Image (tube, rainbow, N blue to C red; front, side, top):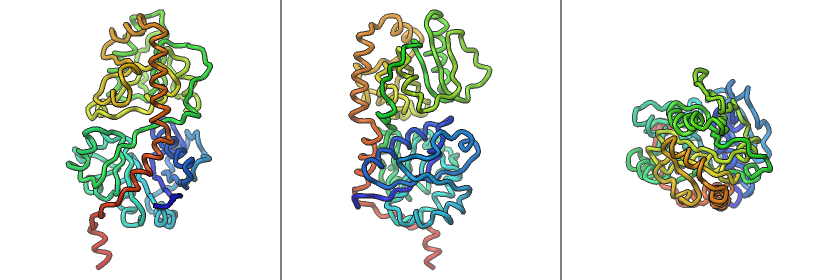
Length: 369
């Protein structure tokens, strides 16, 4: 494999972090690849929602381009896609099935899938209800990069036909996620877009403790929360928090709460990017419980909770010395193992391994005839 690679990503959004975590993940990985000396292009579907909320219009670590339709994608970027050493399609790309079909026979380099939503994707594939990937396409990829590790990797191969499945977890950029001198404002905070399957956990682990601890201060930051949620008076709401403000936000909390979607809990080994962001900022973390958490953080580096009583006990009884010691251990782990540069090295290393032969596609046979 060449020392300097030409890599093309097609993802949900790089330009806008509004209401999605994909942008944060891609930004960290692509910055890391740029630091390693690789040339990276990101192709993004130009959709109104992200176009109206762009907070990264001109990245200095890659070339960012837009397209309107699948036909335009192939017509305008055919040359770049053909000559690329690696082409990566991400999960939740609009019309992803058509995009994959269009590019699978066009790309001459490594063709990969980066699933930033693996547990959600596999649940959708099992129900034949996925609009960005279908089962028959999984074997097309030279490597299926997964946000979930553990048993999910074997399941991708045995049940869905992936030729290779490798973990590529989310990561942080230490230049953007670090401790700031911001004064502590809240006892417990949470950063995350509204999700119906996380809401009960938020009720249990933040809203109920807020009701029972009226003298303590709480905060929830994130978009798309329904207007009918009744927030206690001591819970501050922030509708959207740009990535540039994440470090100061985490640094303003005595503890931050990590909540995991139900499908990710079921799969296990599926850390949230918010988990690594908070740790990089040396903010003590209280997480819900899920299989594989201890493979990222030992018990000495993180607190876990399953009830309002657990949260209250931590807030009321843990000493500052224990709290800060825990946060320091988590920060050291993240800076050593979970940065964008670390992920970029893992990505390139995985693709240095020999390719397995791609399956012959029916349309290739037809075109050859």
